Amino acid sequence: MPQRSDKTETGGSRGTAPALGRTELMRWVWRQLTSMRTALILLMLLAIAAVPGSVVPQRGVDARAVEAYFSRNPDLAPWLDRFGFFAVYTSPWFSAIYLLLMVSLIGCIVPRTGVYLRALRARPPKAPKRLERLPAFGTFETDASPAEVSAAARSVLAGPRVLPSRIDVVDGGAGGDVDGADASEARSEVRSEARSEVRVEKGYLRELGNLIFHVSIVAVLVGVAVGALFGYRGAAIVTQGDSFANVLTQYDEFSSGALFDPDDLPPFSLQLDQMEARFWTDGPQRGAPRLFRARGTYEERPGAEARDFDVQVNSPLAIDGTSVFLVGQGYAPVLRVTDAEGDVVFDDAVPFLPQDGTYTSNGVVQVPDAQPQQLGFQGFFLPTAVTTGEEDASISAFPGAVNPLVGLFVFEGDLGLDDGTPQSVYILDKTNLTQLKDPDGENFRVSLSPGQTADLPNGGSIEFVDLVLFARFQVASTPLVQLPLVAISIGIVGLVLSLLVRPRRTWVRSRREGSRTVVEVAALDRVPRDDLPDDLDDLLDRLRVALGVEPDDAGPGPNSTEPNSSGQEKDRT
Image (cartoon, rainbow, N blue to C red; front, top):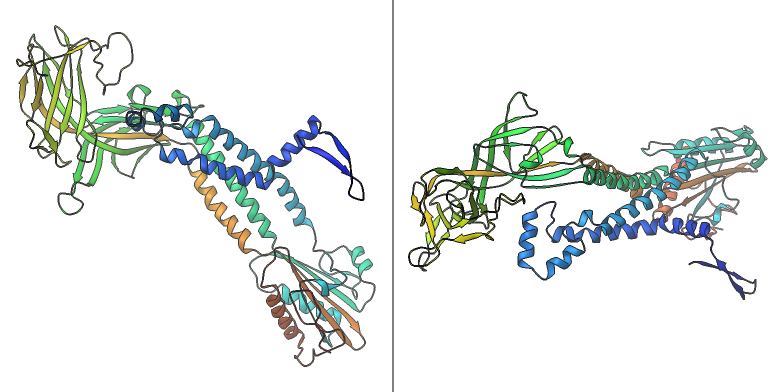
């Protein structure tokens, strides 16, 4: 806990003061949290904390990839799961950093905004008594009066410019401020009609750029937080010729924010009429995807007019604030199963999920209506089957369906669908199933091409009727999805302003001495830069031209100095 220490004037300690009270401690904690250093540290921690979300698969994005990670890393995956690495952006530690950063930024922005608003209403400060002590200073003499010098200085300093500046002219001859400064202040500062002063301050947009940049970061955080809390994301496989309705039961995977209400799902539906997949057939890109396209119709709500859609990769369908992306495709063999009693108990397309770039796919067929026992099939699908040197071994040589082949193992028994326990249609529960054998006692397997039929050992048959494609759609809704992009764009503008705008104060003071007027010019950068002396040289040259002073006419006097960056006077005499 912070403690206060009192010291004597000679540096000796008089002892340690009591520990801070609760109120003082809270104030100290608040000051530390809302400091810019803390905000930068939290921003860096947030960036580091987001790294695992890009390296480790996330459940909210691809649950199947998480399952595959568990199977490949059975020892590491449970430990990562304990620390929330498979749901980084909703984990407690990430949310804590997120909220602390937002509070820190707001605590920085609010007081700085008040300071900036007060600075906007303030007038340029009066000139120091000894201008020659400033980093950039110059002087010359002229025959013009102080009032004429002030007018020329105002004209030069207020010349063509893009960024605003504030100019005050305190003229002793007028007895007050020519451009809005307090008249009483002018009378107290200017006691002679032969004196005049021009005060200029520019660069107000620098702090505005800083504020815009920090506000934009808060806007990005708010936009991302709202999208995460109220948004949802789901994936569904739709076979060519089938339809999809936007209800929870239709999703294969679904995740949503903590404040999302399922009743808010838009009631749209779509019908997939055609799924098209093309691959390169030659060249170095052989086998690479060339075109994925899903076509069909959709209705925004039940009974609404059907509209056509044409969805491609990175070209989603937008429906009532929800985007439907095409994120994958695969093959769905149409299989017909006849049981031992001669009844057709299954006749449908079965999606087989791709496992690699050649679209070698795995799939499951569940036939709960088969008699006398339920049937289950588990196997693979090869789009372009070719045999290897090993007996009965086949692989897929190309992702296109050139020589499709289905290989299935057969099981009978209880599929476990009647006990009410939810099951995935892509996993076969073999707890109460028995794998069928062939007459030689080996595991029975059927290998079918389109149009072929195979008899089952205990009666019945299975037929490979046709081959269709399926589309894997990702349906996502993220409220305020445009806010982070807009905020980042505005934040870049603010950052550019804060880097390019130079806050600078300039003073031009003139006084009459005999028949000549001595003009003193000084400038001070609030953010140190190397070009201040050169800029002052340019200002002096333009001011001399405006007054019609030739270089020789401004020549040496007892008090003449040259512009310099060290504040040191350099006598010409």
